[in-house]
Amino acid sequence: MEIQISDRLAKKFRRNLIERGIEFLLLLAAMSAVFTTIAIVCILLYESYTFFEHVSLRDFLTDTQWTPLFADAHYGIMPLVSGTVTTAAIALAFAIPVGTIGAIYLSEFASHRVRETVKPILELLEGVPTIVFGYFALLLVTPLLQKLIPGLPTFNMLGPGIVIGIMVIPYIASVSEDAMRAVPMSMREGSYAMGATRFQTAIRVVTPAAISGIIAAYILAISRAVGETMVVAIAAGQQPNLTFNPMDSAATITAYIVQVAMGDLPHGSIGYQSIFAAGLVLMLMTLFFNLLGHFTRKKFREAY
Amino acid sequence: MVTVTTPLKAESRDLNFIYNGGHRALKGINMPLYEKKITALIGPSGCGKSTFLRCFNRMHDLYPGNKYEGQIVMHPDNTNVLGAGVDPIEVRMRISMVFQKPNPFPKSIYENVAYGLRVRGERNKRIIDDKVEEALKGAAIWDEVKDRLHDLAFNLSGGQQQRLCIARALATDPEIMLFDEPTSALDPIATANIEELMTELRDRLTILVVTHNMQQAARISDYTAYMYLGEMMEYGDTDRIFTNPTRKETEDYITGKFG
Ligand SMILES: Nc1ncnc2c1ncn2[C@@H]1O[C@H](COP(=O)(O)OP(=O)(O)OP(=O)(O)O)[C@@H](O)[C@H]1O
Ligand SMILES: [Mg+2]
Image (tube, rainbow over all chains, first blue to last red; front, side, top):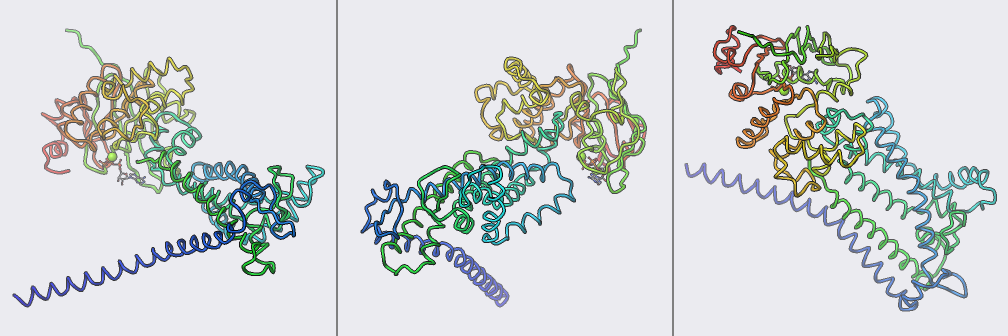
């Protein structure tokens, strides 16, 4: 009798040990992401600090020129911010309607066969290297736009903006579609039973029921559009320009960062440090949108 | 002595239903639905009660490959609900439904009830306000929600949600209301409320209700139909079915010998 009990206890002990071990491994995996993020933030803050020892925060925020590489150096971040905001805004103005309508179509209207064909294609599109999209913007979209808008320069924000839009459509469509699929059938049946059409059901019931997932898709898209580098670096002209006019050429924060990081600026120069300050601004922007998304989702949070 | 004949509201004639994939879930069902009466459908799980109920508002049209044979005729206009030229949306405008699990929309209490009106193109706020209030009163939930009409419907309790769904179905003045086990997800008090509500609704419209609860069928219904394996085994006055069933199978089911 006694042997049996201690035997079982030993088993229980071993089981606990394994459980603990697995738990620890999982924790480690989760923490690695957290640590990397913290490390990145620390480096950004540290390097930016060096930068701000030479440039006042006031100049950084109010100067209308960004020319760290010139003899007459100016360090106003606003031209890069305006470039980033403008290209991202063009992209989203294009991608959010198209992506959302696509998701509604796929989830509520398309036949099973159409859906099963289109979804993998969308996912494939997500995997196309962004440099391909960059040349797509420069060599195809901008020339087409130039036919429509005479006088459009070769390097402008409209073309790359639209192409970034095309790039993020699959994200919006597939994430929103997942959210809409997850709406229980009983809710659709409730709507149809009231005499609603398919369209009314899609717009008035399914979309609001999936709104938190759809907003998540938008946030993902915004982060992608704001952080997109290659397309703008290639097709928008790499010229920091304080303008919100889509016809102008401009540079974005990320485009500037690659430009400098790939050039041969000496490590430790202010020009070099400036990319960290720019990176910090980019991170704050993305953080802002994520928080915004978080709170809108909370507000719309639904429970079935 | 004068015999008062109750008018027919609808009837199914030789109704067969075949699910996508070939399963024949209903076999030659004939059943009357008397006006402003409650008809209960009973029978063991899987016998086809829900399938039958959902033929009335053409819910099966939502899924491809399902097939109806036979007719469901509505009176007095003799419309065959299952007819080829009949728009299922037209049918659902006349026949509304309350589901087993309360399924309010992700909207406010007010908008849930207004849904059917909006879908029908009603824009006049005064009319909608009136109808919403009337429907909520009709579903015996007005006093509980009148101060929070613009709260999200999900914040209500299960029983309140179910009464909200009844209000939603009532707001459009349907002729027939279908209930598929409307109380199976509710506690006894909420169940009693819904049962009382259904007997009150009998003054206004015709009710077809699926239930697993024998006492419920006996308490609230005027007529009872016993289904088994896709067939209508017995139909009659509820009093007679429960006291003096003609078929052995019905008696066994009612007395709990099986099912
Ligand atoms: N979508 C479907 N496709 C194929 N067969 C189905 C489908 N839905 C139901 N059935 C079958 O049809 C028969 C009747 O089902 P139904 O849901 O009408 O039963 P029920 O009497 O409502 O049962 P319960 O009391 O459990 O709700 C069952 O044999 C069931 O397996
Ligand atoms: Mg059922």
